Structure formats: structure tokens, C-alpha cells
Image (tube, rainbow, N blue to C red; front, side, top):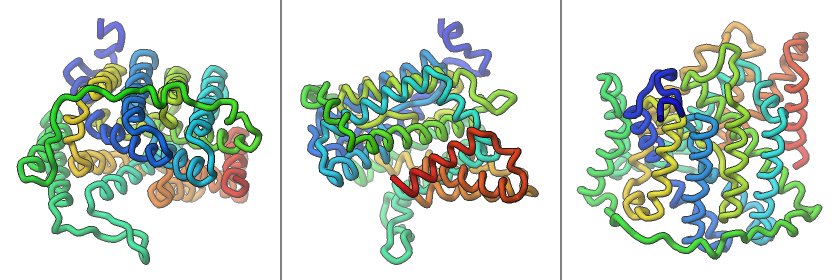
Length: 429
């Protein structure tokens, strides 16, 4: 049944490898079920209800991605979008969290329409090959800075923006041990290197008293305080058009960049560098955003942490189904999931980052009109802490450099339209 449903042999994988990949992906993004409630609680939302909404939205979206689109990609409420929800829309602009949820819901409906029509697929497939490669590498660099931050190796600094953390603390040391373990186990071709390191570092941390074993089982909190609480009428106010557009715009290109980067890493792009079954993947993302707003959470989107499972061998939707089941299990095993600290998953993110950055080697380094936009795209993502911003800088620089170099014929109309939209976003919005 699994063979017919997911085409395991066709993708060169098996059930065991897909399960390991699913568990690996889940462990690298399990932090979202604790981080997201903390962020949205600052907007006045019930923390327990948001916890349940986060688990349900992630489980539903990931299951649709696996069963319908057959991609090893996990979905969950997006980091960055949840911060914009709380600190931008609610605390910054003074709107209620119900109105913000309404804006997320409306953006999800627009996503769905664009996913059914060929527009969104056309937009993503219009990305030039050099930018697709740069997006993959940029996501890798973005993963790297997240990993170093989670490990406490890189910290903020008022003068230099970033600085070296306190390496005398146990967390950076344990993260370093985890990264070395992953690299060594991978070099020795030992299956499940990432998950072995994550669990190993977690066990060491608990036994040494660095982190706590928070328990095993607990009943899930009530979803009532946030379920179906979106204020759609309030979100339809003319003054909120820009907010709905912002949710739409950011998620559109975060998803595009994530899917392109992950598919490139997994070898799932076709001979033309395009994603097969792309429309189904986009519909899964759109549906998850709508459902997430109904449950009571910010925009649900594809997660770059899925790269860890892909590196562990995940190639089909079975990986995503495993992740979805684990998200559902977290409703009852939240204390157990909470035992895994950020410093234990940071090594996995850093290791995957190393693998994704290697895509830059495929760029034609003799063509500066490809090199410059690609490098700008890649470095802008970690330095601005935004995948969407990196893509925007890449499109704008690509069009300007190609056009003024007398090679405007190499840029299609879609690239010009997207570059223009990004200019509007950066300058006007």
C-alpha cells in the first residue's frame, strides 16, 4: 500500500529510511510548538490554545503535503510571520489578535486561489536557474546563523551586530559535540547520523543537569479560546489591505524559496529545473494557512528544517506523514517533546547548512551577471534574517544588471514583474 501511495522504490527509498527522515525532520523543528505559543501569547492569545493550534495546523498541513503532493516537506506556523503577527500587526499597529487572524485567513484564501490558478506556479517556475541555486545556498546560510544562534555560539552585539558567545557555557560545547558527531557518523556512512546526534546530545544534557527531563505525558489544553476567533469583517477594512498583502507576499516567496531549495537538495527538480506536482504542494501550503487561522495561529508555511530529513534520506510524502503523526502525538507528549533543547537540534541545522551551501559551486562564476545577483541573494537571507528579502534583492539586482549589461532578452516578463513588485514592497510598504 505504501509503495503504491508514495512510489518508494521509484524514489530510491524504503519505509525505514522514510521513518528515520520523518523523525529527524520533526526533531529539528519541534521547537516551533513551544516558540510559537510564546510569541503569540505576547499578542494576548491564550498560550495553551495556541500550543494546540500549532500542533494541529502543523499536523494537517504536513499530512496534506505528504498524502496529496508526495513531498518530504513539513509545514508549521512560520517563524518571522508569527513575529510580524504579534510585534507588527497587534502590538505595533494596535489591531486585535482576532483581526490579525482574520488577515491571515484572507491571505490564505488568496493563496488558495493563486494555487488553483497557474499564477503562483508560473511565478515560482519563472525564477532563473542561477537564482534557484542561490536560494538553496542562501537558505543554507540562513540555517547556519539560526543554528549558531540556538547553540549560543553567535550572540547579538550593540556595536558589531553579532559576536562570539560564551564558549565556557555547556550549551555551545554540547552543540559542538553534536555537530562533530553528525559529521563523523556521516563520513563513516552510518544511517541516521543526525537523529543519533540529537538524541545523544539531549541525553548528555539531561544527565549533566544542563537541561531538564520535563516528563512524558500530559493532556492537551483546550483549543476553545482561539478556535474560529478570526475577525474577518475587521480584516476586510481598507486600512488592512497592506497587512493582508504583507502576509501573502512574505509567505509566497518564503514558500517558493523553501520549496525550490529543498527540492534542489533532494534532487526532485526535473530536467528543466522545475518542481513536479508543484501546484499540489502550493495548495497544501495554502490550505494549511486557512486551517491554521481557524485553529488560532499565524501563517502556516513550508519549513526549511525539512532539509535535515531530506539529508537523512527522505524523498517521498511518507516522511511528511511521519512528521504529521508526531505533531499529533505532541498533543499528549508535549513534556517529552520539550525535553529536546535548542542546542541539541542546532548541530543538525548547521550540518544541513553545510550541505546546502555547496550548490553555489554550480553557478557560472565566469558570468558576473549571474554571479552578482546570486551572491546578493545568498548573503542577504542570513544578514536580513529573511528568505523573502534575499529573494527580493536577487530579483531586483538580476533585472537591473542583465538589462544594463545589454542582456535584457535573458530576463522573461515574469522576472520583471516580480522585481517591480519587490521594489514596491521595499520602497512603498
